[in-house]
Image (cartoon, rainbow, N blue to C red; front, side):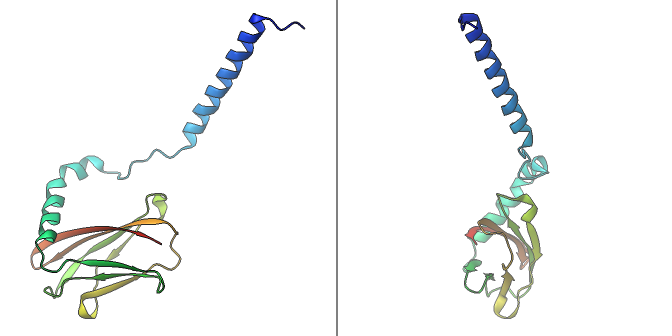
Length: 146
């Protein structure tokens, strides 16, 4: 069999089409989900989020989030000026949506809440604390690595 220009072009286009089909197949296997299922509603509610951030900046003592790796826990220290604190802590794992979870804000003595991290997926996490106290709403977000 003689290899001429026509054969070369046919081999090239066949290889190109096979590579294209493979890329289309691989792209259908990738999870293209959005960070939030309700991104449009979240965008409309951004002013409330902005107000929470502004309230948090006006605090004399800010909420402190510590990743205590040796104790395998995350410690939240709420400002001492508030006695009644409620809200929600959202642990967001950017690499695995199924690992995300929420915990109610329930500070113990001295306004400190400890959340165990034992058994959680290792890697990057975002701790998002949406809390209310003293008739105002606050928000704080911090990135930790487990």
